[in-house]
Image (cartoon, rainbow, N blue to C red; front, side, top):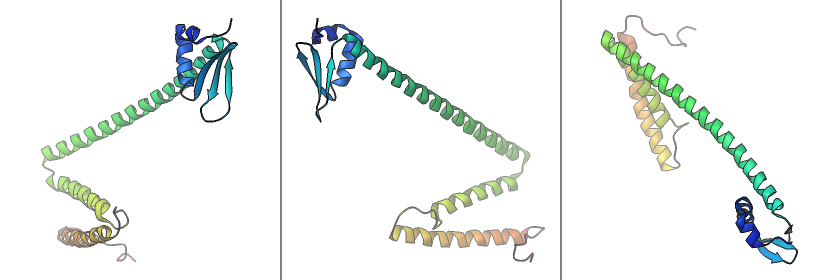
Length: 172
């Protein structure tokens, strides 16, 4: 007995497989079974039995299961990375709070100053600044102004400290 569309629609997995194949093929009933003709080309598939569609469904489900496992592993990796970042942030926050309670204000302001300096360098340094044309030129000019002030503050703090910081050029 030849395979008909009615037979396929009664079987859930065969129906699912035919629906997936129908995206790329047109389905026609012939006297010996179903014929799937490729929509963009001249390839034809001849289906004589429900097992043909069951096999297609099995292969598709197997590839989906593999993809799900890969996504699950990637999700686990991201979760662990997020937990690691969260732990580092909490540790840094606790360290900062401990410094504040001990009254180590100078060290806290040094940490904040260094963080601000890194941020400004990333935002405005000509090597890292996003944008093109006039925007890049404007960012470059902002960087020069800001960095001159940072250098002045660095120089001022090094001359007021008890042990002046020597540059690498002075040590030669």
